Amino acid sequence: MADVAHRSAALPQNGFFGFADRFRDKLPALLAVIGLIGSWQFVVWAFSVPTYMAPGPLDVLRSFRDDGWTLWSNFWPTLFEAVLGFIFGNLIAILLAIWFVHSRTAEKAFYPIAVFINTIPIIAVAPILVLIFGSGYLPKIIIAALICFFPTLVNMVRGLKAVTPATLDLMRVLSASQSEIFWKVRIQSSLPFLFAALKIASTTCVIGAIVAEWIGSNFGLGALIIEATYNFRSPLLYATVFTAALLAVMLFTLVSIAETRLIRWKASDVH
Image 1 (cartoon, rainbow, N blue to C red):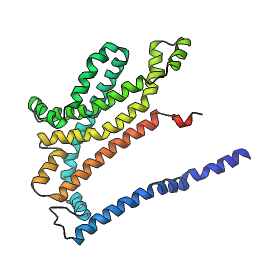
Image 2 (tube, rainbow, N blue to C red):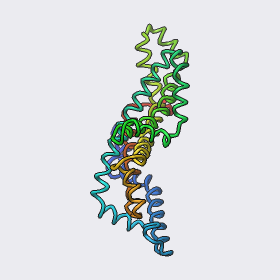
Image 3 (tube, one colour):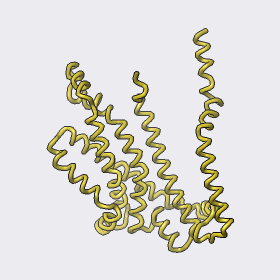
Image 4 (cartoon, helix red, strand yellow):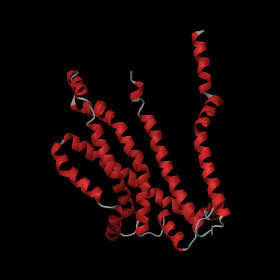
């Protein structure tokens, strides 16, 4: 009987009831978005704003329809640059963080250099990289990697060092090797810090790729933004900006899904 009662209590969380709960949670945000879009369209109509200055949502939707192939063909280069920059920038940051944790000398030597590199504006670095590597994919990937690198390095170092002395003492009492301490304790403690940085990097890598395309490129969403601006094609400009935002949201969502798969525990779950 207790088991039947338990299953009955769990029913509202599944199927239609679970979907209804999730929809109810998202409803305020959905209504807010609809309200903002409606207000935008009303202002454009009420004040007769010229399309080349500020197109309405309907104009932007028409641009998605009429310029769909242009948006699609420029979406893929930016996705390629952003994803590769995300992978390489974060991978290098993670490897450096591991090295810093195991070598105090390396941290003292190279951490200030990483800080200095981070202080240089990306918009200033982009022309230099374009001059050195040309206007192909490589400078865009490097810039996307640079913009991801520092937040991940800082958070990963902090996460690897977040292990309490009591935990380390316990592992030593249990005769754990340095390798076991690293994989079972330090890496586990660093995951929340790492994913916090990866969520930031998942959006900034798109910014890095687009900024690089502004400097010198004939393809990608960044180049399309420049072209649409100079040709006063405001609906296409807005559609391109929304496409870039959707790309960033997509990457952020993928990182969030990976976080839920890899981090099974939460601090609030520990009693």
